Length: 230
Image 1 (cartoon, rainbow, N blue to C red):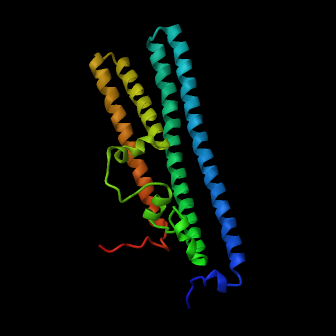
Image 2 (cartoon, rainbow, N blue to C red):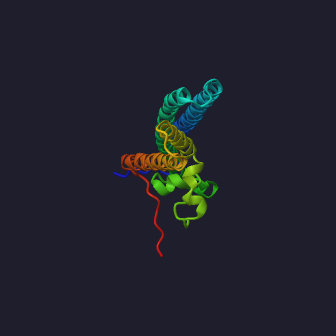
Image 3 (tube, rainbow, N blue to C red):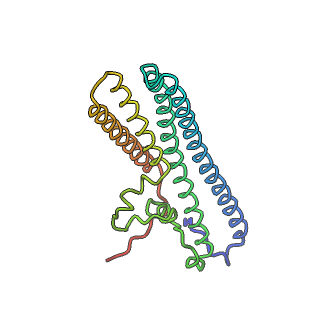
């Protein structure tokens, strides 16, 4: 038995179906808005913790003149900031996965709209397909475009990417302070900070990629994007 919706003109229940679909669409829009709100709230919380730590360290530096006490307190406080930053990046990745899920849901609803009224297809600029290319099209990304400098570094302009850079900088500061505590030369301090920065940035980038790839198989595709013959 076919499960496709009959045309709206021959379906007496079309109005009820449209009402149900529209209600679910508004629900997904509201949920996506809450996802954005939590993302910004998480970032603001991390920046507030970072700002407070920097101000506190500035006061301690004035009293201790960057002595051993300052180094010990700075390492401890920056470690707390580092933990908050890692947790923030992790949560942002989870929220991005949720946002991808809401986009897939809205694409499926859009597919149902077009089944009821296929003549409206030219009026949609977002995708009615729930696979990865369809979701990226709805989000304004083109998976078929050739890689450019902007697309390669796109991750750094996202919230997880920007926070990851700040977290990596905090990790570099911790490594540099630890090296200073051991009394090593300046070039070793710089090298320790650089290595810590690259290590943290690489680890967060790989964690973000694994987070997204681990989610993709659980998003079952019901309406794949049609392939065009060459």
